[in-house]
Image (cartoon, rainbow, N blue to C red; front, side, top):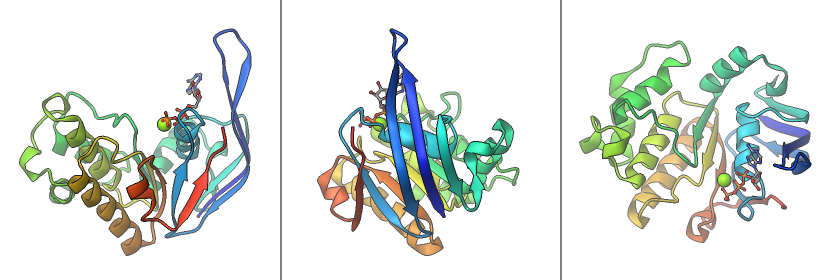
Length: 215
Ligand SMILES: Nc1ncnc2c1ncn2[C@@H]1O[C@H](COP(=O)(O)OP(=O)(O)OP(=O)(O)O)[C@@H](O)[C@H]1O
Ligand SMILES: [Mg+2]
């Protein structure tokens, strides 16, 4: 369902030089496959997820998701495609500060053009242990609670590909396991593929497939 070929991504350094971050000849993820992505800080894990989601453009190569090369889509089509196919748990959450936890999840639903479903949004928040915080805005939530809202939002549109960037980095062990179980259950129920970035051995050890990004 996901296929990368000869993907290259460089950033410009402050002095103007080009800094190669990603050089991936080939990477494949089948429907329903769950893979842990590891690699040291700064090696390009978040950059890779941003490229796969089309939030960042690549310099070269193709990224095919469900038969569509996301690198060839125009921005608006890409945004719609992302909303329909991809759930993204951002490392820095990216919640909208003016909106409550429930509204953040509901807003995630509007980007597909479908009618938002408040009952489903509330259920997802309940599944990450936040049924008592539906109306709280991000600034009134703890960091771990914000992260769990981000997880609920990523599942809002029943994506076929989940990109989870250290989704339990700020969460206590009990809720960490709840979040991992929820992500796995979503994957297993609907053949969702997942690329999960984590530094936590107790999380990574639960998955059979690992890939390490060289720096
Ligand atoms: N917009 C940017 N402009 C220039 N350099 C960038 C930009 N974004 C990221 N980088 C550089 O790219 C490298 C990879 O960053 P990235 O965020 O992908 O790392 P990471 O593997 O996710 O690290 P971490 O484990 O700390 O989250 C870093 O060295 C960073 O300095
Ligand atoms: Mg990162």
